[in-house]
Length: 323
Image (cartoon, rainbow, N blue to C red; front, top):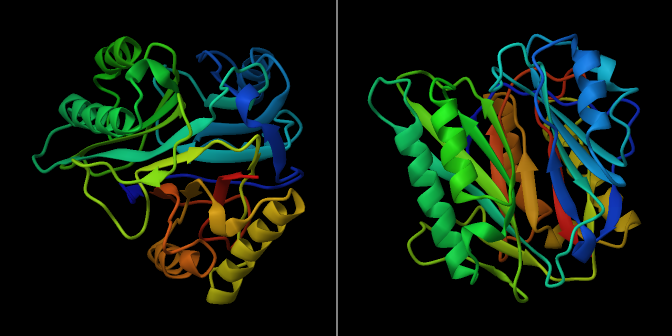
């Protein structure tokens, strides 16, 4: 799916924004949550639990926290800070995802766009929608000749954490190898909402395609494979202001980052898009295909959010691209 209503924030303060990694050696990790201590203390504990050489970090941080304290803690070549309305453990202020060395993916990686939907009835319960998301992920994985056991990372965005215990158990049983993370998003409670994205280990070279059983879109591809020896991960890129020129500059900076690592913005495999307003959403949707290939759009999760560490920024983007 291509649009979610989220409360997020991102910062590029003090962080390098791009890294080349060996595709076959990529590993995905999440740090266990803790409910004690300040954001800085929790971030230090989480960072210490990530093993290996760290390539990319994405941190989900509670909306009320001052994320600038993370600048000296989250040291990695590519970093994204994403503010959310809730985390699965009481007292938790940060949830940390990492892309590191130490993996074994000889046939490459498969990126699957966020899958899910919403329930029209007024209910905080989201487990039925999560189950729909998982079935759609199964459809995408099976079309790529994969199973749920091949999933290496899964991130789910939920409108409510009321059923997180059952949802976590369901995810662990369904995707046992995946590094799993969950975040609450501020979708109105009359819309039970869930969307989950997956990165899996390929069993063979996999291209870009839309499986039967999933509604195709001109704006994203459900399944995108990377079988090149190397790939590039960018961190969060932001515009200078909420204007057409500012958003074009954001994509141009991203293009420059990728080019400096020998990759191309036209051939992005996975695109994470973070507009934080109606205008930001409009500009992001309107301008992205001046840079991405329209004939082969990347897998994508487009997450609406509000609040950025960079004043005036109304959208953000980070990507993974073959090299």
